[in-house]
Structure formats: C-alpha cells, structure tokens
Length: 101
Image 1 (cartoon, one colour):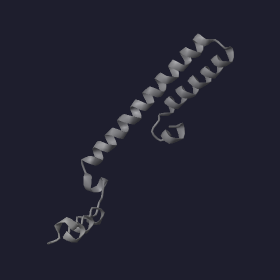
Image 2: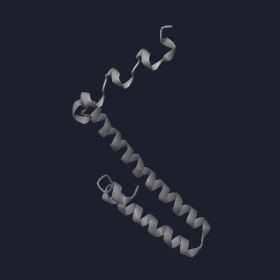
Image 3: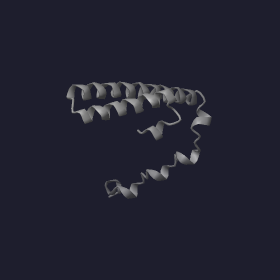
Image 4: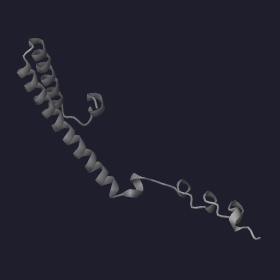
C-alpha cells in the first residue's frame, strides 16, 4: 500500500511521522552507520504498523456496519444464483450403463 492508497484514512500527523522517519532513514543510510540504520528501520516499521492497525480496524468497523444491514451492503438478485437443473443434467441418455438390454 502507498500513501496515496490510504490518503483518506491516514491522519496528517501520521503522514508527517512517516515522512520524518523516511528522511531520518535516508540520512542514516548516507552515514553508513549500520546500527543507526537498523534503529531507523525499526522506527519506521513501528509507525507503519500503527497505521496498518488503524486502517485494518477502520475497515473492520466498516465491514461490521455493512454486515448489520446486508441488503444495502451487498445487493444480489436471483439471477446471480441460478438454481435450475439445466446446469447439472442427470438424464439416462448421458449414462450408457442405464440403457435397457
């Protein structure tokens, strides 16, 4: 997922946190300090984890809300689920072992 994918679900302060963490990570990479790079990666992972958790919870609440009103959330018609026997023919002509001798 990208920032654009979550743009309407992320708080502005979260975007700022991610951007700052990325900037700090880039600076660490230029310094070639492995321990510093590892710390910055871990910090960025934590921030992204928080955002992911919030996005997941929000999606779960939306799904729960829509499942409480299934008719408006998932409209279906009978034509989408045909129950005709034509899909599974079982006539004797398809099975030669049932022909009279």
